Length: 117
Image (cartoon, rainbow, N blue to C red; front, side, top):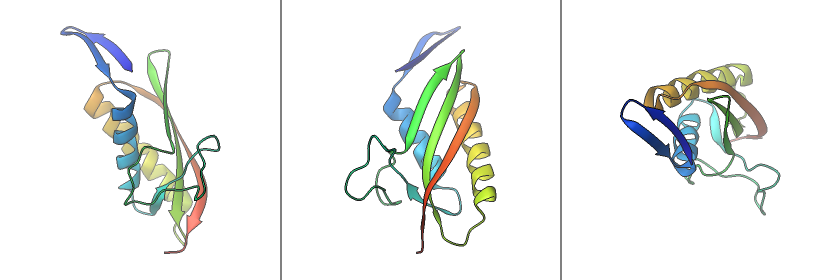
């Protein structure tokens, strides 16, 4: 649960909502094949594709009143990884700040694999 206070009162936003918001935003970027699980979450397959729910590969933390977001992604083979990462960082930061009003201090993107589809 991530909470903050404004002139209307205290607002609590669930961690599941943040994971869903960030995961869907990242997967909507060109070149992203899916979200990858972190090492502690890996199962047999080790990754999720766009058709799966974006509840893995996303970690949201608060530090000094701002959000730190870690993303683990799978990219499409042949795409420019630098351009994909820049796009994700900009889009995720904008979406989270616009929708929640909370500042994003950092978005870390980890490319955990490539998909040849």
